[in-house]
Length: 328
Image (cartoon, rainbow, N blue to C red):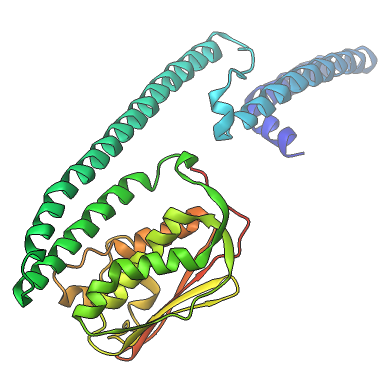
């Protein structure tokens, strides 16, 4: 019915013209007092022929209409499924569409190549910057002073920002970077804790983790990145007390006793570039850490949630139970 109504709207002028012509003929025949029977017979034949021709035309138009409806879906635009042109105007429109599709394909390929080149550049840059950072760390470790420990902490932050830049460039890449398998959680969590152990020691924070025998269907590297970012935030915004990592079934929770998150900031902390009240106080905050965590978790089919009481700490919970993975 929707297709038929659309057909009538499209050709309403032609239908009205036919009805107007029939009305003119009837009026002329009535004025000249012509016999009714031949007039009605002629009108009936004309109506039958018109209805038959209209049905044939409607069936052909409906086929083309349905073909155009299928083309509205993005995947179909990449296929040669255009209906046969019914007139020169349609042929020109189809040629324009083919030209636009060619331009679009070239633009997509060019963008993909540029993204690949950018990712390669970031990868090379991160590996190159690690060399001078490692040299500086070795030089600082030669003498254990408070100043050298502070410089080592700053070097650690440089490494983290470099890794974050690499992750940001890779996050929207294809799924070939993912290795989804049954992964024991304990080694991943302990590796993340060990990486941030110097910062815990420097700020005299207690880390609480009792170990676990749980495992989850996930990617080990990306899971460790998420946990590292959550631990980084916990250390950054906790001046005293402890950071606790707990595993309960298929959930991993990182909780701290730090400054917490303001109620008005809580719904927006995973937005790209949003720093919130604490971030605005800390001029070095980028607003990318939690955004990358949320996006990486979504890519793995996991779910990341946050809860907080302002001034008393925050807790981030990673829900690992999911069979849905996003391969973009």
